[in-house]
Image (cartoon, rainbow, N blue to C red; front, side, top):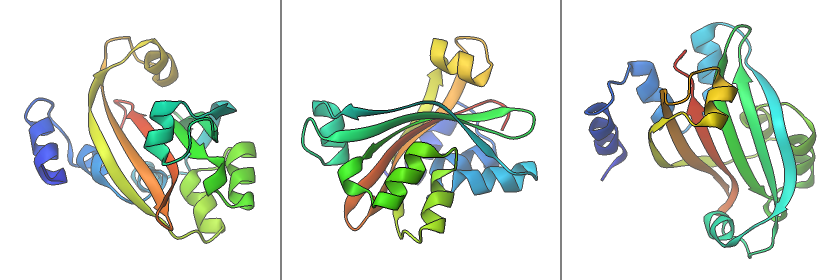
Length: 175
């Protein structure tokens, strides 16, 4: 099924705005789209950042050996009023340039902006998207009641044929 067919199937069960359609399918920077929509800078707040060993599923997802070091990061994207996105990312440290690794682990900077500043050429490949009912973590992070239906998407950022990051974003209903 093509991306468009999957989008139309989702729209059949969850009415989508044009903005939501764009956010689910863009292969560009979500931060830039949000800044254009909101008319202000978008901030990143890191909730958790730690280096973990890739388990079997994570290793397969990232194209690394089981046990490889992976940066696991959980962030919120916010404007001056609202939390707009709750995101988790996995970045295999062996695939990252030193400067990229340092920036992603030590700064509250959007990934796209880090890549732009370092002139990293990459592409985003959408893996999947859909609707979920907010669990405890999403409800807390996005300030919504548990059980609220939220849109999510997963994608990879690929450079030189290797996965630099695997990202899962959950969008608040305020977009």
